[in-house]
Image 1: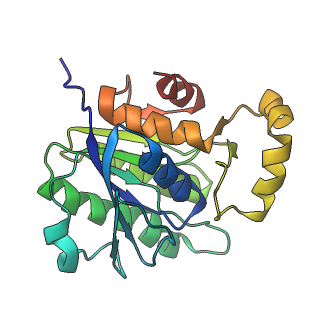
Image 2: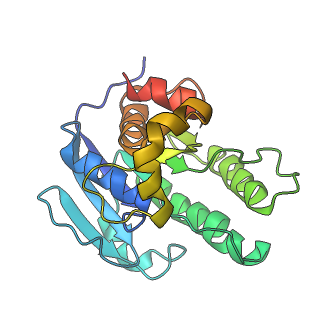
Length: 223
């Protein structure tokens, strides 16, 4: 039987982005989370008794901060970048090389850790499709699932409504916030708050599969 974690310690990447910021806000507010360590290239601009920050220039080299990355129950990997205008080689550095190197370090330091990776809808798990970003994300998902964590879950969100209080919201998402009820009828999505709650619950209770689409995440958020 899986042990339910009552109070978890979390490593978070991507807190300076829209998804990561929403996950950070929920972690700081959620009583199931005891402590959050934000690992990023720059500061997130928030302070909280639960929050510590580690600044690193390259996720592929964590040697300078390794001693501060042990004793954690979960890693929420929310860092990412748009593929627009990028070559496959350059995109792979951020979307494949960086998360795999980061995961290798934290798994070695925390063998009982659960790793939750934010991917995206229409990611290509076969790694053979014509869409570059989908292939690269699929390659990252597959490689992470082979790593020696207690659990690995790849989340594939699509349309997402921002969380109230967010500062880092992409321009088009302010319109989505207004039109979300209508858009959600035709393009089912979820709120970023529910995404974050689903990530926390995946660590606490586990999930039925390693790749979760929007209906799976909605169900997990409601636990």
